[in-house]
Length: 221
Image (cartoon, rainbow, N blue to C red; front, side, top):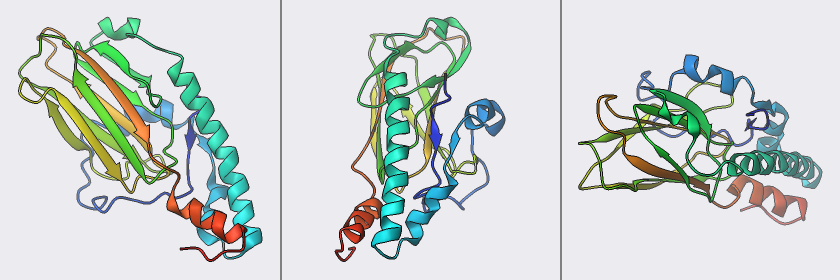
């Protein structure tokens, strides 16, 4: 079902924390390999970083538009699945498709992994919140971004959902061309809390805006 998820080589900017540590926490490549292996290769879009005139900029834009269509199909596919996944009664489930601009709901019994389509923006906003009365001491969350090589682009970034802070809302930057992965977990002996999660990318990357200006014969900013 993940065959439409593209892996973008265009704009694969790596966050400044990428070289901070080799430990990527719960974002196991081995666990996610079946999903990452099904990404659509788009190495040719590296040309966007080399556009120097109107012709090369237009080639870049044509490739980007094709990629954007694939991403939109991936988002539409993920958004078709609404409500709680029936498989979430298991101790560990996923990866579950995370679309955009639409909440996904569930009951966290032990661990749940989400993977979204490639981010065609410089920014990505992630929202996770508890929606039920019951909440254990803490629900642990980790956010990872995978580069076009299929490897984590940076160490996992941790967050927590607690009784005093039942909502996580953060916008990540410098993530264009990366694939988001979110892992939620709690001790399996605790009663599962209900949650909802949503991811949204921002406006199109600045590099593409510059290519549009170059293609139109204007000076890129």
